Image (cartoon, rainbow, N blue to C red):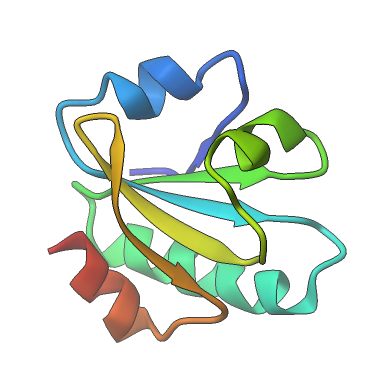
Length: 102
């Protein structure tokens, strides 16, 4: 499944109301570690076609970052039933990202 660009407008529909877990990457275009994380997420999305992965650009969506208390980027947050059930901060390996989805 393609990575979903998340905004204030579609966040509830794509993440909060999702029946499946959704892994959300909070990132910014100026963040070096975020740039390193992007191809890893692309690879996970390719390997795990049923995985739902979304990205929130915190520069464009600061209200979402504030709503979920995001203080550092990149932060990966796993949402299940509309709530965060797991997080990781910093660049993660492909294996660790896949483990979060299990």
